[in-house]
Length: 284
Image 1 (cartoon, rainbow, N blue to C red):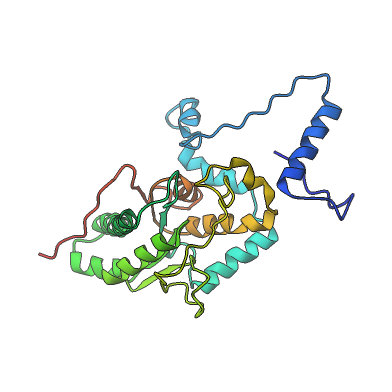
Image 2: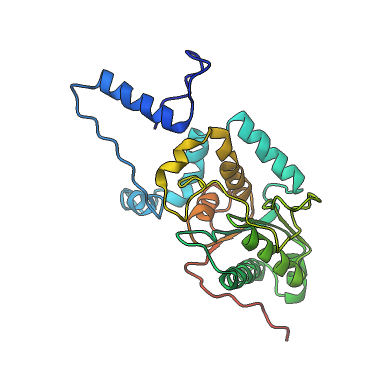
Protein backbone atom coordinates (compact mmCIF):
# COMPACT_ATOMS: atom_id res chain seq x y z
CA UNK A 1 0.00 0.00 0.00
CA UNK A 2 0.99 3.66 0.16
CA UNK A 3 0.43 6.53 2.53
CA UNK A 4 -2.77 8.53 2.30
CA UNK A 5 -2.68 12.01 0.75
CA UNK A 6 -1.01 14.59 2.96
CA UNK A 7 -4.19 16.62 3.22
CA UNK A 8 -4.10 17.42 6.92
CA UNK A 9 -0.48 18.51 7.19
CA UNK A 10 0.16 20.36 3.97
CA UNK A 11 -2.59 21.54 1.65
CA UNK A 12 -0.03 22.21 -1.07
CA UNK A 13 1.56 18.77 -0.88
CA UNK A 14 2.12 16.77 -4.03
CA UNK A 15 -0.44 13.96 -3.77
CA UNK A 16 0.35 12.17 -6.99
CA UNK A 17 0.85 8.44 -6.54
CA UNK A 18 4.59 8.69 -7.17
CA UNK A 19 4.92 11.30 -4.40
CA UNK A 20 2.94 9.12 -2.00
CA UNK A 21 5.13 6.13 -2.79
CA UNK A 22 8.21 8.21 -2.01
CA UNK A 23 6.66 9.29 1.33
CA UNK A 24 5.97 5.66 2.13
CA UNK A 25 9.60 4.70 1.46
CA UNK A 26 10.86 7.52 3.70
CA UNK A 27 8.44 6.43 6.43
CA UNK A 28 9.74 2.85 6.29
CA UNK A 29 13.36 4.00 6.45
CA UNK A 30 12.72 6.31 9.43
CA UNK A 31 10.68 3.90 11.55
CA UNK A 32 11.93 0.45 10.51
CA UNK A 33 15.59 1.13 9.73
CA UNK A 34 16.81 -1.59 12.10
CA UNK A 35 14.35 -4.19 10.80
CA UNK A 36 14.01 -6.06 7.57
CA UNK A 37 10.84 -5.05 5.73
CA UNK A 38 9.73 -7.13 2.78
CA UNK A 39 7.19 -5.75 0.31
CA UNK A 40 5.66 -8.20 -2.14
CA UNK A 41 3.38 -7.53 -5.09
CA UNK A 42 1.93 -10.75 -6.47
CA UNK A 43 -0.28 -10.89 -9.55
CA UNK A 44 -2.42 -13.98 -9.80
CA UNK A 45 -4.44 -14.54 -12.96
CA UNK A 46 -6.93 -16.58 -10.96
CA UNK A 47 -7.13 -13.89 -8.22
CA UNK A 48 -5.74 -16.37 -5.66
CA UNK A 49 -8.63 -18.81 -6.10
CA UNK A 50 -6.48 -21.94 -6.46
CA UNK A 51 -4.48 -21.14 -3.32
CA UNK A 52 -7.59 -20.32 -1.28
CA UNK A 53 -9.54 -23.41 -2.32
CA UNK A 54 -6.51 -25.64 -1.66
CA UNK A 55 -6.48 -24.44 1.96
CA UNK A 56 -10.14 -25.28 2.66
CA UNK A 57 -10.46 -27.74 5.53
CA UNK A 58 -13.35 -29.64 3.90
CA UNK A 59 -15.25 -29.57 0.63
CA UNK A 60 -18.25 -28.22 2.54
CA UNK A 61 -16.37 -25.03 3.39
CA UNK A 62 -17.44 -22.16 1.08
CA UNK A 63 -15.24 -21.79 -1.98
CA UNK A 64 -13.30 -18.75 -3.08
CA UNK A 65 -15.99 -17.84 -5.61
CA UNK A 66 -18.69 -18.09 -2.93
CA UNK A 67 -16.98 -15.82 -0.39
CA UNK A 68 -15.30 -13.25 -2.63
CA UNK A 69 -18.25 -10.86 -2.83
CA UNK A 70 -18.84 -10.87 0.94
CA UNK A 71 -15.17 -10.30 1.68
CA UNK A 72 -14.88 -7.56 -0.93
CA UNK A 73 -17.85 -5.57 0.34
CA UNK A 74 -16.82 -6.01 3.97
CA UNK A 75 -13.43 -4.42 3.21
CA UNK A 76 -13.98 -2.00 0.32
CA UNK A 77 -16.56 0.74 -0.06
CA UNK A 78 -16.51 3.14 -3.03
CA UNK A 79 -15.52 6.65 -2.02
CA UNK A 80 -18.38 9.18 -2.29
CA UNK A 81 -17.10 10.62 -5.61
CA UNK A 82 -16.79 7.15 -7.13
CA UNK A 83 -20.19 6.06 -5.81
CA UNK A 84 -21.75 9.22 -7.22
CA UNK A 85 -20.32 8.41 -10.64
CA UNK A 86 -21.54 4.81 -10.41
CA UNK A 87 -25.07 6.01 -9.66
CA UNK A 88 -24.84 8.63 -12.40
CA UNK A 89 -23.64 6.06 -14.96
CA UNK A 90 -26.44 3.64 -14.09
CA UNK A 91 -28.95 6.44 -14.40
CA UNK A 92 -27.62 7.75 -17.70
CA UNK A 93 -27.72 4.30 -19.28
CA UNK A 94 -31.04 3.42 -17.60
CA UNK A 95 -29.57 0.31 -16.01
CA UNK A 96 -31.17 -1.34 -12.98
CA UNK A 97 -28.84 -3.58 -10.93
CA UNK A 98 -29.54 -7.24 -11.53
CA UNK A 99 -31.79 -6.53 -14.53
CA UNK A 100 -29.31 -6.30 -17.39
CA UNK A 101 -26.59 -8.42 -18.99
CA UNK A 102 -22.99 -7.40 -19.67
CA UNK A 103 -20.17 -7.89 -22.16
CA UNK A 104 -16.58 -6.88 -21.45
CA UNK A 105 -13.96 -6.75 -24.21
CA UNK A 106 -10.27 -6.13 -23.54
CA UNK A 107 -9.01 -5.20 -27.02
CA UNK A 108 -5.70 -3.60 -26.01
CA UNK A 109 -4.25 -6.37 -23.88
CA UNK A 110 -0.48 -6.75 -24.47
CA UNK A 111 -0.92 -5.68 -28.09
CA UNK A 112 -3.45 -3.60 -29.97
CA UNK A 113 -5.91 -5.62 -32.03
CA UNK A 114 -6.45 -5.14 -35.76
CA UNK A 115 -9.91 -4.20 -36.99
CA UNK A 116 -10.65 -7.69 -38.32
CA UNK A 117 -9.94 -9.28 -34.94
CA UNK A 118 -11.98 -6.62 -33.12
CA UNK A 119 -14.99 -7.27 -35.37
CA UNK A 120 -14.68 -11.04 -35.05
CA UNK A 121 -14.27 -11.02 -31.28
CA UNK A 122 -17.12 -8.51 -30.80
CA UNK A 123 -19.44 -10.76 -32.79
CA UNK A 124 -18.34 -13.78 -30.76
CA UNK A 125 -19.12 -12.01 -27.48
CA UNK A 126 -22.67 -11.33 -28.70
CA UNK A 127 -23.07 -14.97 -29.78
CA UNK A 128 -21.74 -16.17 -26.44
CA UNK A 129 -24.05 -13.94 -24.43
CA UNK A 130 -27.03 -15.26 -26.38
CA UNK A 131 -25.80 -18.83 -25.82
CA UNK A 132 -25.31 -18.24 -22.10
CA UNK A 133 -28.80 -16.78 -21.67
CA UNK A 134 -30.37 -19.47 -23.88
CA UNK A 135 -28.86 -22.17 -21.67
CA UNK A 136 -30.26 -20.40 -18.62
CA UNK A 137 -33.72 -20.17 -20.20
CA UNK A 138 -33.62 -23.82 -21.30
CA UNK A 139 -33.62 -24.92 -17.70
CA UNK A 140 -36.91 -23.10 -17.11
CA UNK A 141 -38.79 -23.38 -20.42
CA UNK A 142 -39.07 -25.50 -23.55
CA UNK A 143 -40.52 -22.79 -25.81
CA UNK A 144 -37.44 -21.64 -27.75
CA UNK A 145 -39.24 -18.91 -29.69
CA UNK A 146 -40.53 -17.24 -26.53
CA UNK A 147 -37.15 -17.71 -24.87
CA UNK A 148 -35.42 -16.00 -27.80
CA UNK A 149 -37.78 -13.03 -27.60
CA UNK A 150 -37.13 -12.71 -23.88
CA UNK A 151 -33.39 -12.78 -24.46
CA UNK A 152 -33.50 -10.12 -27.18
CA UNK A 153 -35.65 -7.90 -24.96
CA UNK A 154 -33.11 -7.87 -22.15
CA UNK A 155 -30.80 -4.87 -21.76
CA UNK A 156 -27.11 -5.37 -22.52
CA UNK A 157 -24.26 -3.17 -21.25
CA UNK A 158 -21.02 -3.29 -23.26
CA UNK A 159 -17.74 -2.14 -21.72
CA UNK A 160 -14.30 -2.12 -23.32
CA UNK A 161 -10.91 -0.44 -23.25
CA UNK A 162 -11.33 0.32 -26.95
CA UNK A 163 -13.89 2.51 -28.71
CA UNK A 164 -13.98 0.35 -31.82
CA UNK A 165 -14.53 -2.88 -29.88
CA UNK A 166 -17.39 -1.46 -27.82
CA UNK A 167 -19.18 0.00 -30.81
CA UNK A 168 -18.63 -3.13 -32.90
CA UNK A 169 -20.38 -5.24 -30.24
CA UNK A 170 -23.22 -2.72 -29.88
CA UNK A 171 -23.83 -2.51 -33.63
CA UNK A 172 -23.67 -6.26 -34.18
CA UNK A 173 -26.03 -7.00 -31.28
CA UNK A 174 -28.54 -4.56 -32.76
CA UNK A 175 -28.19 -6.20 -36.16
CA UNK A 176 -29.07 -9.49 -34.48
CA UNK A 177 -32.26 -7.97 -33.08
CA UNK A 178 -31.19 -7.02 -29.56
CA UNK A 179 -33.34 -4.02 -28.71
CA UNK A 180 -31.57 -2.43 -25.72
CA UNK A 181 -27.77 -2.38 -26.07
CA UNK A 182 -25.83 0.44 -24.43
CA UNK A 183 -22.22 1.42 -23.82
CA UNK A 184 -20.46 4.18 -21.92
CA UNK A 185 -17.48 4.10 -24.29
CA UNK A 186 -17.54 7.20 -26.45
CA UNK A 187 -15.14 9.23 -28.57
CA UNK A 188 -14.34 12.92 -28.43
CA UNK A 189 -15.60 13.60 -31.94
CA UNK A 190 -19.11 12.41 -31.20
CA UNK A 191 -20.82 15.73 -30.52
CA UNK A 192 -24.38 14.57 -30.21
CA UNK A 193 -23.59 12.94 -26.82
CA UNK A 194 -25.12 9.63 -27.95
CA UNK A 195 -22.75 7.09 -26.45
CA UNK A 196 -24.24 4.36 -28.63
CA UNK A 197 -23.30 6.02 -31.95
CA UNK A 198 -20.11 5.07 -33.75
CA UNK A 199 -17.89 7.51 -35.60
CA UNK A 200 -15.64 5.14 -37.54
CA UNK A 201 -13.38 7.95 -38.79
CA UNK A 202 -12.66 9.38 -35.33
CA UNK A 203 -9.29 8.71 -33.67
CA UNK A 204 -9.17 6.51 -30.62
CA UNK A 205 -9.46 8.20 -27.25
CA UNK A 206 -6.24 7.99 -25.23
CA UNK A 207 -7.30 5.70 -22.43
CA UNK A 208 -5.71 5.76 -19.00
CA UNK A 209 -4.81 2.19 -18.05
CA UNK A 210 -4.67 1.41 -14.35
CA UNK A 211 -1.32 -0.37 -14.64
CA UNK A 212 0.29 1.45 -17.59
CA UNK A 213 -1.08 4.97 -17.78
CA UNK A 214 -1.57 6.28 -21.31
CA UNK A 215 1.26 4.16 -22.70
CA UNK A 216 0.21 0.55 -22.13
CA UNK A 217 1.36 -0.61 -25.54
CA UNK A 218 4.71 1.18 -25.38
CA UNK A 219 5.58 -0.53 -22.09
CA UNK A 220 6.19 2.41 -19.76
CA UNK A 221 5.19 0.87 -16.43
CA UNK A 222 6.13 3.90 -14.29
CA UNK A 223 3.90 6.27 -16.24
CA UNK A 224 0.85 5.09 -14.27
CA UNK A 225 2.16 6.82 -11.13
CA UNK A 226 2.02 10.29 -12.68
CA UNK A 227 -1.75 10.92 -12.43
CA UNK A 228 -4.08 12.08 -9.68
CA UNK A 229 -6.45 9.50 -8.19
CA UNK A 230 -9.64 10.97 -9.76
CA UNK A 231 -8.23 10.21 -13.20
CA UNK A 232 -8.69 6.53 -12.40
CA UNK A 233 -12.27 6.71 -11.14
CA UNK A 234 -13.68 5.39 -14.41
CA UNK A 235 -11.78 2.13 -13.90
CA UNK A 236 -13.81 1.41 -10.78
CA UNK A 237 -17.05 2.89 -12.08
CA UNK A 238 -17.02 0.42 -14.98
CA UNK A 239 -16.05 -2.40 -12.63
CA UNK A 240 -19.05 -1.81 -10.38
CA UNK A 241 -21.45 -1.29 -13.30
CA UNK A 242 -20.30 -4.61 -14.77
CA UNK A 243 -20.66 -6.28 -11.37
CA UNK A 244 -24.32 -5.25 -11.15
CA UNK A 245 -25.17 -7.28 -14.27
CA UNK A 246 -27.16 -10.47 -13.98
CA UNK A 247 -24.83 -12.40 -16.32
CA UNK A 248 -21.57 -11.45 -18.03
CA UNK A 249 -19.40 -12.54 -20.94
CA UNK A 250 -15.70 -11.68 -20.76
CA UNK A 251 -12.36 -12.71 -22.23
CA UNK A 252 -8.79 -11.48 -21.86
CA UNK A 253 -7.41 -9.58 -18.91
CA UNK A 254 -9.51 -10.86 -15.96
CA UNK A 255 -11.22 -7.48 -15.48
CA UNK A 256 -14.60 -8.97 -16.43
CA UNK A 257 -13.95 -11.96 -14.19
CA UNK A 258 -13.23 -9.58 -11.32
CA UNK A 259 -16.60 -7.91 -11.87
CA UNK A 260 -18.25 -11.33 -12.01
CA UNK A 261 -16.74 -12.29 -8.64
CA UNK A 262 -18.26 -9.13 -7.16
CA UNK A 263 -21.71 -9.91 -8.55
CA UNK A 264 -24.67 -11.56 -6.83
CA UNK A 265 -24.73 -14.35 -9.44
CA UNK A 266 -21.15 -15.56 -9.77
CA UNK A 267 -22.21 -18.71 -11.66
CA UNK A 268 -23.81 -16.82 -14.56
CA UNK A 269 -20.79 -16.05 -16.70
CA UNK A 270 -19.03 -17.23 -19.84
CA UNK A 271 -15.25 -16.99 -20.12
CA UNK A 272 -14.29 -16.77 -23.79
CA UNK A 273 -10.81 -18.03 -23.04
CA UNK A 274 -12.53 -21.33 -22.24
CA UNK A 275 -15.53 -21.21 -24.59
CA UNK A 276 -13.66 -19.89 -27.61
CA UNK A 277 -16.40 -20.15 -30.23
CA UNK A 278 -20.12 -19.53 -29.90
CA UNK A 279 -22.57 -19.59 -32.81
CA UNK A 280 -25.87 -17.83 -33.30
CA UNK A 281 -28.70 -20.41 -33.31
CA UNK A 282 -30.10 -21.25 -36.72
CA UNK A 283 -33.85 -20.99 -37.22
CA UNK A 284 -35.44 -24.42 -37.83
